[in-house]
Amino acid sequence: MMLEQDDIDLFREATKGIKAFKQDTFLIPRQKTNKQKSPLRDIREKEDTLFYFSDEYEPLLNEESAVKYLREGEDSHLLKQLRRGDFSPELFLDLHGLTREQAKLELASLIQACENEHVYCVSVMTGYGSYILKRQIPRWLVQHPKVRALHQAPKEWGGDAAILVLLDV
Image (cartoon, rainbow, N blue to C red; front, side, top):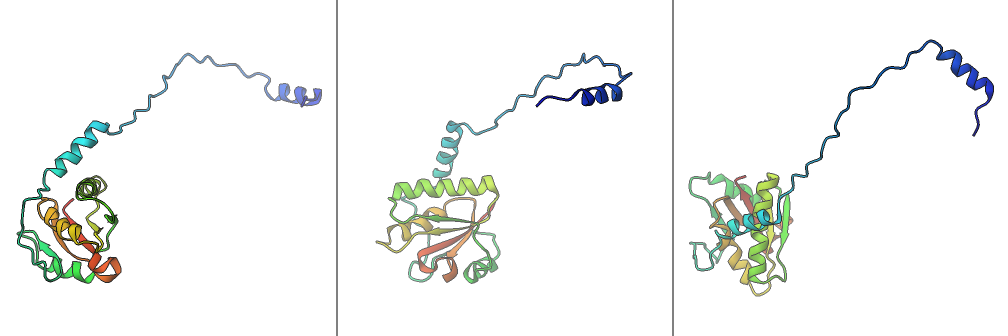
């Protein structure tokens, strides 16, 4: 598209008497720093969290009734609130079909993610299956210092096949 001579004359008339200014300042463009965790740091954090999960530890959990645990020094009302579903889980972890070792890694990752994201209530779905994970998950969780309380989830959050976990983040 070409400008007509009238438009050019109009522009020159409007800009008559304007002085060009001298640009002598140079701004260096900012470098964007990607502050991402290194893969090595991520692995170390998982290993640190895995440190708490011993397969030999046998806590005093009543496995005949609903699974429940309350850390020493916590208000006993927390268990009642978990049982009623007063806390809504912000993250859900489904462990169906995983081996014990895979489940342990996923559980460690979940707790680490909760710390990073400041999530205090999660639901861990163990399923029914052969009850291996259903029995083992609470045993691992009670060993971790960030776990304040846990209780079998109410029906709306998974019922018998899930555990609500309250974390100290």
